[in-house]
Length: 470
Image (cartoon, rainbow, N blue to C red; front, side, top):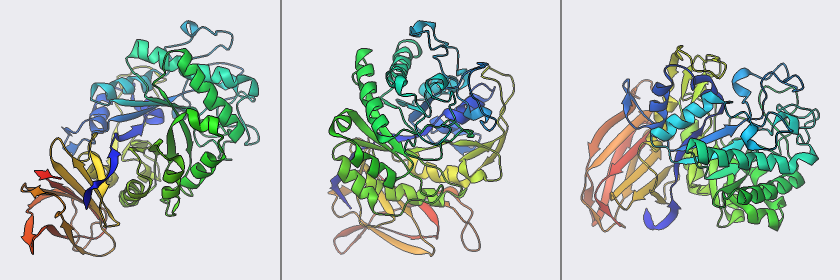
């Protein structure tokens, strides 16, 4: 490995709020879930993930508004209520700032626990801005947003960001107006908020959003786009943008899906990174149905090595207990508190092994670290110059493996080595480990500095090597 090949400053790990925050933010034990997600403390014997990035979902839904086309399939936790309830009230002071209380409660809990990077994203404009008055897709799967509402949609996003900074103490680092905008599945009646935007529409809205942010003196808040469903779509969209749109996009977001659950395996991660040149890039949403976390761990490795994002975001850390429970790091029984504080508690159902696998990354590669080059295709390495700590994370394959990490390019390595391991499929000789710990030493052999270990299959290993100098 080589610290001279530096991928840049790591901004951190995160998750979206949206549905789980609406469901849990108003219940009496919301602090318990916030501790698990946003601190590195031990909570009830569970090691907190310590996420520092929060994606806040600005809603478009109404409350008891007869002209809104809710649709029978729109699930309550996926119906995020918006603030600009009356189209005639152009003054933000008259909007309904008491809406979406539960999600905002978790937003503040995350901030109180150390989360320090906040992004706003929209799944749909306000219902009345859309041609069919629905936040769950257009009638045809084409453009949802009425062409007369481009500027008002942009002003809505900017006004909420301004209000948040002034009244909630949350400064949004970036704002994303689209979620999977090129997808053709946003068709009414849908089960969640979603909106299709043609390329021309995306360009107009992105440029309008930049103007709107500048008008409310949020010049340092970036426009993020386009948050397509997968790398292929993101590359296609970026290449279709004109130069004026590329100029106003300060951050490229992309989701990590392909065919719904399979991790993307093609070469276009590298192509997207090259196409966007010096733009900041986030892997802004990922989820899969594998409760073991093995598929997710493989995807993180590929993203960091090829896409080289500065942040990696999981979709929903707490999912309801349904048959495909693997999407959540944690499963809980959601309670509809109707966006009001409640004395009811959200029952914990299951902590999936995926929770521990994500922690193999999030607890040890912290904000401010730098990912660096490492030859092994199934490993990543990160270095922190202030603590002089080197972190190597290895995801093993289908067989037992003997590894040897050569630290000879570092000038000094005299510290201890701690290994933390999670086995994703314990069986037979493979132990049932969830962040099992042991110590190793750096060995000197033939003038080389080596860390050697024998590893179980389908496992995630984190090596913490202290007192390392580049």
